[in-house]
View (tube, helix red, strand yellow):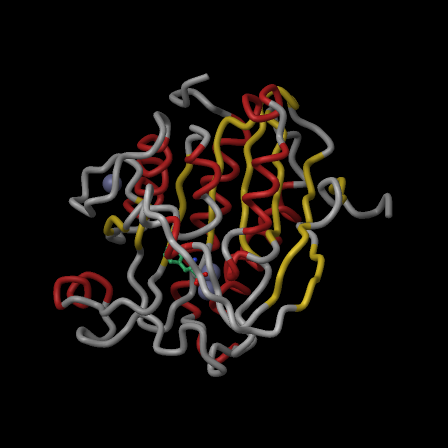
Length: 280
Ligand code: PHE
Ligand code: ZN
Ligand code: ZN
Ligand code: ZN
């Protein structure tokens, strides 16, 4: 309705999908050049699902700041940390930001089908024309931002954190630094995390769009050094309910979600007004 402060619409139809009792995608993408033959013995159901995209009415459409989170979960559970947390945080950012006369257009994406191989974000990026792609100056991704045994992890876009993943497209380092400044302003630490395409920023960095984001950890194990920085329990997964039925509202660490929601709003608002330092 006109009362809703953002333009909302689907992005050119849905994503054709095959649902099955296996997931193919991330594992294969991690071994470039490999030839993989799959023998599939599963019940296949054809389906269709949509991304939900909303953007500010105002702002220069030649300079688009894009912010995304996946809305789907795995079948095993409700997916509240993965990824109700990121979805809720960007929705609130969108609603608050809509009251400001942004300089750049800010486009929010609620991706479908991340869990079965980044299908929604992949199709979106693939269908952009070269001109549309060029107008997207930054992409910010938020997938799991309230893990119960959290660490404040920033995608290692500057490759300075010895994560072993390659540096992101030019401009990604700026995003990591800008996010880091927010945590510094709260006297909070951050650590780097793999920038390897394991969430919806993957298709964006694959076409050279500067990207970044925050993550509070999934099935990985918190180190003693991280426990010293963030509290919580060393030797235990960041999210013991990752992809399980227990990923309910009780699985959310409210401190982590509160800080991250502020960091998400801060970085989105800064880029909404100023893209200095991001290469054209
Ligand atoms: N994309 C993963 C999932 O949804 C979680 C993840 C996010 C892993 C960010 C690494 C980095 O299950
Ligand atoms: Zn997941
Ligand atoms: Zn996720
Ligand atoms: Zn880094």
